[in-house]
Amino acid sequence: PEDFCLYIPKSENLDKREWYRNRARVLRYVKEGLDSEKLKLKTGEKILSKSRKEGLVEKTTIVGEHGNSYESELTKKGEEYLRFFNSFQQAEKTSSHYVIPLESLEELPPRDILESSSVANRSGCARNKIDAVIELDESFASLLGWFVAEGHVRQDSNNKGRFLDLGITSD
Image (cartoon, rainbow, N blue to C red; front, top):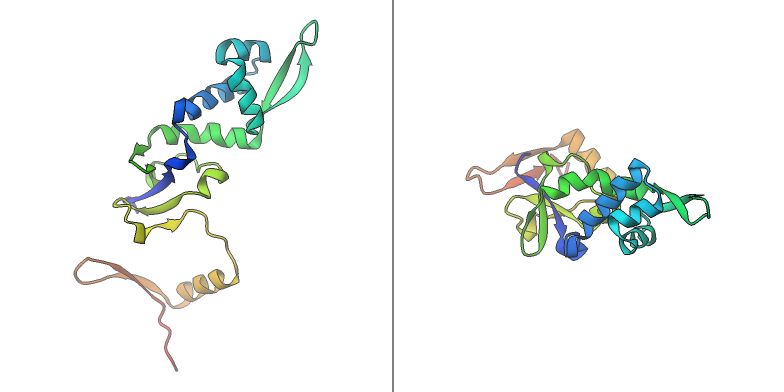
C-alpha cells in the first residue's frame, strides 16, 4: 500500500558529515575506472581508505610506472550502496529516522541497513512497526500457510484498525 514506509534508524549515521554522499562519489569514480591517484585527487586519500576498510571497494591491479598506483573495484556491498543512494537521497528526515515511502524505493537498501530498519504506515507508530527483514522459519511459514489457505485481512467498521482472520475453528 502507498502509505507504508521504510524507517531507517538515524543511528546508522548515513548523513553524518556527508558519509553516504562521499562514499557514493568514491563508488561512482571506481565504477568509472579511475585509478587510485586520480581517485585521491577527486575524493581524498582518507575517504578512499575508509571505503576500502568498510568493504565497499577493493584494490585489484597495481598500475603506474613505479607501481605507486592501483585500480579498484566495487565489492558487492559497494554496488548495493551505490544503487540505493538515489532512494536514500529522497528520504524524509525525522528526529530518529530516515523515512522512505515503499512505493518510491528504486532499490532495496544494502542488507546491513535493512536489518536495522522497520516498515510501518506513514504515522510511524511504534506499535505498528515490523522488522524490515523477517527470517523465514518453520513457524512463520506455517502462519503464512494458514493465511493463504483460510485467511483474509479486514478493516473494522470504524476504520480504526485492520484485522488478520485465519478462519480457524475449534472443531
